[in-house]
Length: 130
Image 1 (cartoon, rainbow, N blue to C red):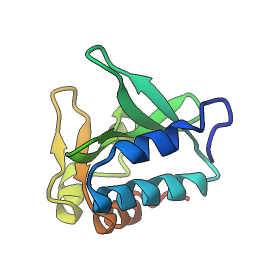
Image 2: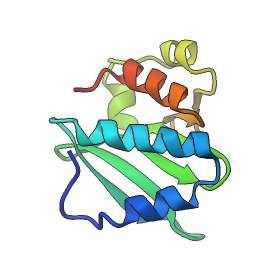
Image 3: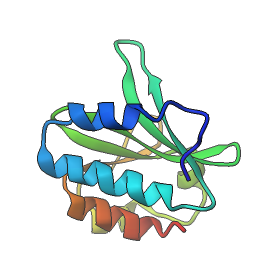
Image 4: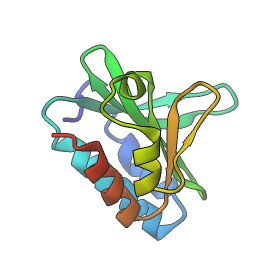
């Protein structure tokens, strides 16, 4: 579900800034799927030191297992944050079998580049969220 405590106008603003039409569709798919989650509160968040990053967060109570950032030309970068990595529910190898762009960053988080709605759908199926 979308958190009502955050500025909903950001969704349209962020979508407008994504240059690639396929990536716009992926953004719409992920945000739309997140709206339908019952066990997560989701919202936009601006963050970053060298200019704001557009971060979409998935919160499960006090835990943030997932998020993704938007990028004008490079697509969406989806993060498996520490709670998801430590959960034992997922493995990086299994994620790489579904999406070849999966990688581990220096912080031990897993990332996946999403540029198409098909990739967004594959990721969503992998996550198995309800």
